[in-house]
Amino acid sequence: MSLVGKKAPVFNAPAVINGDEIVESFSLDQYIGQKEVVFFFYPKDFTFVCPTEILAFQEKLAEFEKRGVAVVGASTDTEETHLAWLMTPKNNGGIEGVTYPLVADTSKTIASNYGVLAGDWDYDEEGNLAFTGLPIAFRGSFLIDKEGVVRHETINDLPLGRNIDEMIRLVDALQYVEKHGEVCPANWEEGKDAMKATKEGVADYLSNH
Image (cartoon, rainbow, N blue to C red; front, top):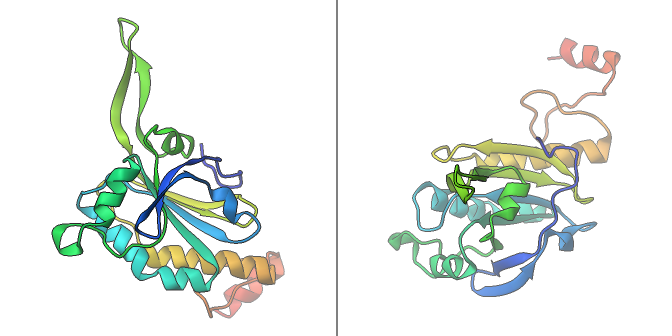
């Protein structure tokens, strides 16, 4: 089930903030009424595609921040593993220099509530609780507005890295819609024409493009 249009699931979990500090109770609630949030899941620390994404978000962090948007990552690793990875230099496969929060979803409940867990619990023939699939998160990305409502989500399979510039474009689109009350057509980017959500508005837009 899609979360778009619904309140983002609430959680309190350990996280590493500022690249070097573990906090025991981190929540997205701190951004309600203050900032939009790009909340993304990645499969696992100390892997291959994941550091390219995490570092790419860091490289674009100033672009998100100047738009008033918080970036928060999460995986099912522990906060201690997050910290160890953050302390590992890039040339050794680490993500040293990342400053936005990384949440530790060791219970896998956050990934499950967001619909991105790559497996699930079930009972076997003997009645024992078992896990089928992989106990890690798919590459889920969620754009959450200032009211805590999910406005966009994408979920990539494990080998498929995401496009960080597309997340910025979606932030721009959401902020444009909320500021101007217009809608953003296909391939819209900041600086391009939007349109009014009426037959006349669509006709006018199409006649000029």
